[in-house]
Structures are given as structure tokens and as C-alpha cells.
Amino acid sequence: MSAHTFATMGTMVSIRLAHTEPDDARALAAVANARAVFDEFNARFSLYRDDSELSQIARGDLTLPAASSAMREAYARAIDWRTRTNGDFTPHRPDGVLDLNGTIKAEAIAAAAQVLHDHGFDDFTLNCGGDVVVSGAPETGTWITGIVDPGVNNTVLSAVSHTPEWCAVATSSVTERGEHIWSRPETAADTTFKQVTVVAGDIVTADVWATAIMAGGQRALDLAVMTDRLAVLAVTRDGALVGNEDFRALVAR
Image (cartoon, rainbow, N blue to C red):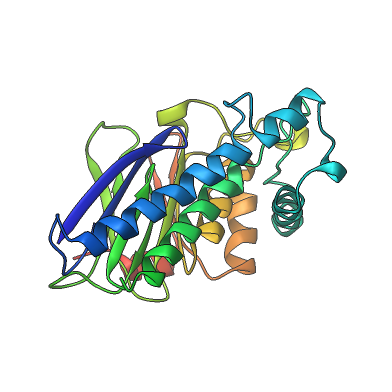
């Protein structure tokens, strides 16, 4: 197995390719092209880059109708998720700035994973800032993803064994980035959870619902598991665990 890491989009990406050696030329080319995908997303959608298209929109130098088709389509997908989550996920910050990070990082992960497939790699893990998508299996056993305890640094709270239908996991937490989740005014007082992990069949679904449940609390969690097939583990503010049956079935033993 070969392991590759690089920095992009303000975080670290780790890719592990089964059945390859670290100096495998085909693997290195695949990883380089996957990195290019992240860099392309970052160049267009980052609000930390003054020259990005999204920063131009935030400054008022560019209107959304005049933006690229890639920008307008990404915004439309984010609005669709706002509808599906009953507003608990939104691409609009409280200050009115359009911020697509809630979907874009996951979309970049999915696109980079497709690049690895296109290069002929079907057994890999791709971890971007703690959000993970897996494919196939390692040389032995199955891929397992650990979930960090939000109350104890570097301690594993639980772990899930992946299957093809449960290939993506995303975690939203206040412990790493502070209180960065935006809530609607009527739910702003809901501080039910301090961490939510969602396992799903694709990384965008997992990532969006993890954010929405953090923002909307128990009501959003109930909507999530009725809307999509999800495995959910949430940690309440007092440290209690809330997990549904699908999550319990995936716990690595």
C-alpha cells in the first residue's frame, strides 16, 4: 500500500492506494491529478483567496447571474440541499455572504475520488480534513474509519467498517473550529450536539447532513434519517451518545 499526503483547501488530504508501492509512477500520476482537482475547486470557490470567483461575488465585483456555469450550478445544488434539509443547511452566511464550503469540499472529494477510479485504482481511501470516502478494500480485511472523541483529544470514540453502500463518512464538530455552524434564528438556541458523524453512500450527502444536524439538533436528525439512508452517531453537549440502528450495525468489532 502507498500513502500520499498534501495540503489544499486549508486542510490536509491523505490518500492510501492499496496494492501499490510508494514510488509507483501510475499512483503518483493519479495522486497528482487528484490534487489538481482540489486546487481547481479551491481556486474558484475559496473565500480565503482574493482572486477566486466566489471572493469576487462576495465583494460585489461579480454578480451570481454573471458568474461561470460551474459557480451557478454549485449554487443551485446548495440551494437544493437547503430545501431538502428544511433550511438547516444553507449556503448563505448570517452576514449575507455566499459561502459554498458546505458542499464544495465534499464535491471536490467526490471528484478527486473519480480521478483515482479513472486511473484504474478501485481500492483506496481519501481523507480530506476528516471527511472520508473509501472504495474497494485494502490488501486484507475492510477499510475502517475511526471517529475522534470530541471531549478527549486524540482518543477514538468509535470506528465504522465500510461496505460499498456505506462508503463515505463526514463529521461536523465544534471542537476543531469552534462554533462555526450557522443556525436559523428560530433554532439558534439549539445546542443539542457538539459533534455529529454521518455515514452514507456518498460524501456530499454525509457532509451536508452532518452540518444540518449540528445546526438543527434532534429535529434535524429525525428529518435526516427519514429523508436519506444514513448511519448517524451524535455526541450531545453533556457527552451522551445518540446513534441509530444503521450506525450500530457498522461499528467495527
